Image 1 (cartoon, rainbow, N blue to C red):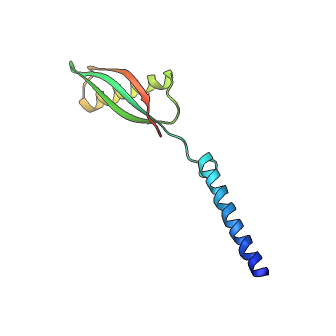
Image 2: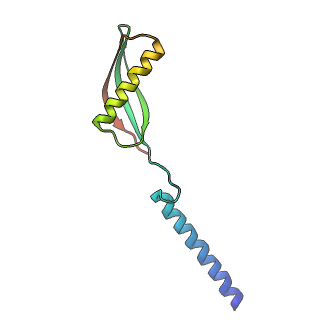
Image 3: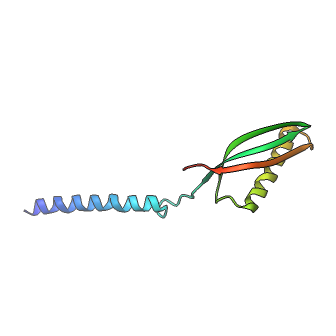
Length: 101
């Protein structure tokens, strides 16, 4: 009888351990993962007078707000200036849409 009780207790602890691990994984407490927000950003850009429209998916640490959008725009202008080695760069965000996780 004690062997069966020990087996039952072991199974109960095993199931409880899986349930606790599952809860912590989805609450992101135990594994300490930061949530990333993925956005599709449609942009208009002009480099040396050549204009184009494009769209890219970007990951952000928080939800999109106006200050984060301004910082994103400045970084993209700097990247385009470095990439094409010119100061004649215009960049405008047309639309952004949050993608499903």
